[in-house]
Length: 259
Ligand SMILES: Nc1ncnc2c1ncn2[C@@H]1O[C@H](COP(=O)(O)OP(=O)(O)O)[C@@H](O)[C@H]1O
Ligand SMILES: CC(C)(COP(=O)(O)O)[C@@H](O)C(=O)NCCC(=O)O
Ligand SMILES: [K+]
Image 1 (cartoon, rainbow, N blue to C red):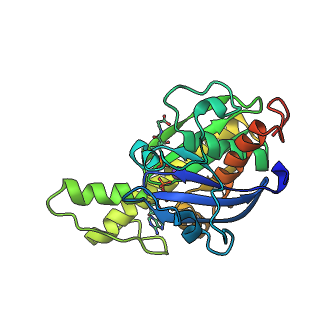
Image 2: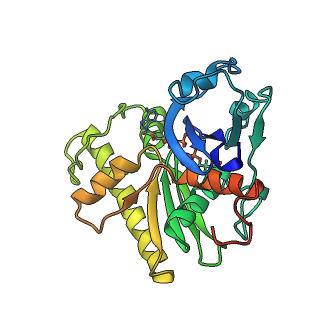
Image 3: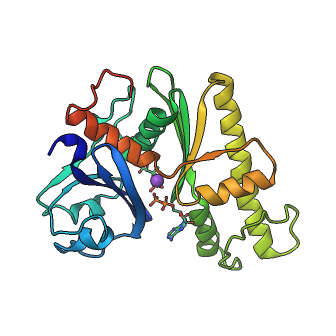
């Protein structure tokens, strides 16, 4: 069996969830999200994640990237493990504490849509990550994600309740507490996305802007309701990034070659 048709699993450990991708060679066959683990996984665990694809008990390679050290450590005894670190990422000017999820997402987005590239990841945190046409990190920004913003108001105030988000845009000028919270959080996030996108396009007019992360679809729907130019949502860019790193290490992709 060649590298091109070997099955393997990519795992991105985020702060809220585990993001799984099942690959054959460089092709992503399936992806899904699960909660964090509470204990080290059993031998059958991976089969339970991909029961249709992983039919026999095989120790297929697990390629892991993580921004949560305690969750990564639970995999220490898996015998066919590869950990991706910033050293594996073929992008320039990364700083030492840069999040590996941001690096992989922008690598994957650039591989799929071209560089320069701006990624907006609406996950636990909401991040902006921009890379130029020479694959140099231009920089980015980090703010609390939708759920974290909602939770922090409830946790740090006496009177504000737990609020869930509706599928439709809230009233901007709310006359009710829950709607006021929804309005404040959603409209400032949309304004932030608009501002960062505009600034980015001033620098790189031809760049793609890719939205990803657990709240990506929701934000795209709000965005469309405001009738602003469409935002491209892609939940698979993180896996395109993992596949690029794996392809380089197995010689399928040359590190100097355009990815
Ligand atoms: N089933 C779910 N479980 C947890 N979060 C979810 C779920 N579906 C959507 N979300 C949203 O996803 C966001 C987290 O995004 P995600 O990309 O999973 O985070 P991370 O990559 O940081 O683990 C939360 O703000 C939450 O609103
Ligand atoms: C910013 C993040 C917390 C985002 O994590 P996520 O919301 O995707 O779970 C993560 O990328 C991280 O820990 N970054 C390190 C700091 C940095 O990127 O500058
Ligand atoms: K993420």
